[in-house]
Image 1 (cartoon, one colour):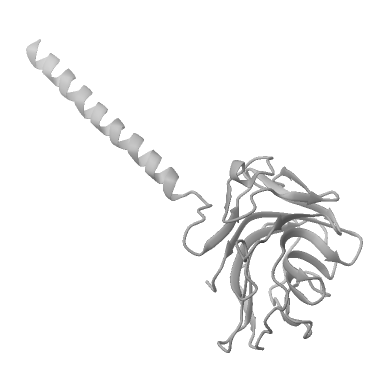
Image 2 (cartoon, rainbow, N blue to C red; image 1 turned 45 degrees about the vertical axis):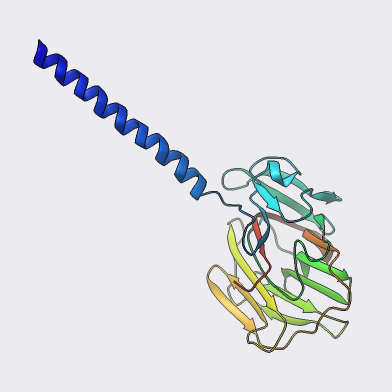
Length: 243
């Protein structure tokens, strides 16, 4: 009897010790895998875990504005193919905007944006993500090109004319696509870069400094061709450096 009781006590102690360690690992693992962390060069991040336009309540963080202001029919809807929510852009001029003050969210001088995008239909020449100083003079925007399944990244400073790079990787409808866009002033090549599902295209043309400061950062159909182009955006992360 004594021997059996000792074995029982030892087993309980071992089990308690093991489960205690597992609980600590779960907590640590959760912290390590958090998508959004606005530290270092990250100035804005929005995973969109819930239907809440205060990004700090829906898996986001920001060095500036934390409230997504909707225009027209832009909304948060359930992820069409996966967990959580996503930005829903049904047509032109449906977008969310964030105020930019003193380059707190995004800088025209240099930066990187990573995000996931999902199309249920396609419309050419539609701006979908961008930063604006003055429309048509100082602006940066990512969107669909004239060719089906191809994206463009366009930068214009001081009304000097647009500089563009287009993707060579043709995307498919109804599936999530991972995109990274980059830009930087100066003479270091490249000046513009766009990566679509791990295939990168670049442009070495030097960019022109903006005359007007950044005033807004937009997610959605800010401008372009009219008509339907149902798009979802998710997991947006902005850096103030070339990554």
